[in-house]
Every structure is written in structure tokens, then in C-alpha cells.
Image 1 (cartoon, rainbow, N blue to C red):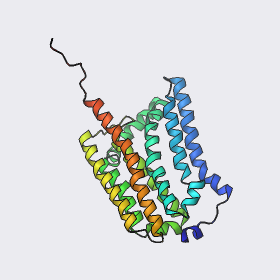
Image 2 (cartoon, one colour):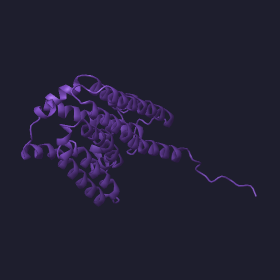
Image 3 (cartoon, rainbow, N blue to C red):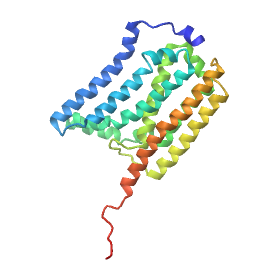
Image 4 (tube, rainbow, N blue to C red):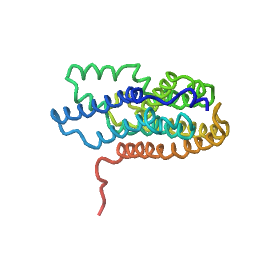
Length: 262
């Protein structure tokens, strides 16, 4: 395949360079968790586990067997999409990184960061309509135009697309389920409606890929990738829906026990 021809086997040094940012991100979180636990209450271990798993999912799409096979097999590429654009963002959102950063920074720096989070640009970037458009819209552009073929010819474009898939997926996730403190909170109804529309667009795209393979992708691989995107995406989306519904239930349940007349 053209993809394989354009990305010859990568050296160990190149793989280590690609892996370095993930190591830095993982270690930074662990160091921050240790410092936070030392200065405040103990940082929950499960959040560190979520972060480590999220980084592992994201890293596996850049280096290692999945990343290498994705260069030759569209089905494996789609597995990478699920790991990088959906599962890794969800796991890393559950790790509450912004809360950890706020606990780790000194008071002055934390206040500066808080002002940035309350700013107008952040309110726009965190709106589910915007994040959904960037996330799902970006995938439609990738798989329904020549961008996928162009990505297979250019390693720099390949990395840019991967970064976009992760960042868009992460922003989309944190705009729907509030794990970290969120200055620009929107109603559950609004977020639920946007989530349902986004899920529909994602499902339609998977069927489109099944019926209309991206340029250069064999029909059998497109069908495999489309089904994986449809069913794999549904599995992760169920978790997001469950979290949103649970948060909704907690926010609206009666605060006082109902009086029972004798």
C-alpha cells in the first residue's frame, strides 16, 4: 500500500523521540500527585491510574505494534482512532488534571490560571457545540476528503492529524462531563442534546466509511474499520452517557429525605 511505502520501518531512536512527550506527561502527573498529596489531602490513586491508562492508550497509537500496523491496515488505524480520540480523552478527563494542577501551583499562579479558565475564549472553546463541531466535523473531513490519503504521504501531517484527534476528543469529553471545576457550566439538557446529535453524526460517519472507503483503502478494510468505529464508539459513548446521567441524577435528586406521613 501507498501508506506502507511512505512510512518505512522506523528506527528505535525515532520511536523513542515520539515516546518522549508521553513519558514527560505521565511523570509530570505523578510528580504533581505526590506533591499535592504531601501538601494537601492524599490525591486519589485511581485518578493516577486513569491518567496512566489514558497516556498508554494515546501512546500506543504513535509507537508500538498498533501504530506500526495502522500504517498498513485501516481496521487497525480505526482501532487507533478509538484509543486516541475517545478512550484516552475519557480516561484522562477522569484523572481530573486541572484540579491537580490547581492544587500543585502556588496561590498566585493558581489565580492566574483561574482567570484564564474564566475568560471568554475558554468559554467558547469549552462550549459543547464548538467542541462537537471540531471533533466530529474533523473526522468527517478526514475520512470523506483526500485528507486521509494526504496524511498517508506526509509524516508531519500524520502527526498533526493525530494531535488534532486527541485534543478535539479531549475538549469534547470535558465539555460534556464535568470532572474538573468548570467556570462555564451549561445545563444538563443542553449537553445531552449536543451529545445525542454528536453520537448520531459519529454513527452516520462509520456507516459512510463502510459504504464509501477512503481513497486508497481496500473495501474489506473499510468495512472492518467502519464496523469497529460503529460498535467500538458505541461502547465508549455508553460510558460517557452513563457518567452524564449519573451527574445529572446527583445534581437534581432531593437534598432532604422525603417526609412520610404515618
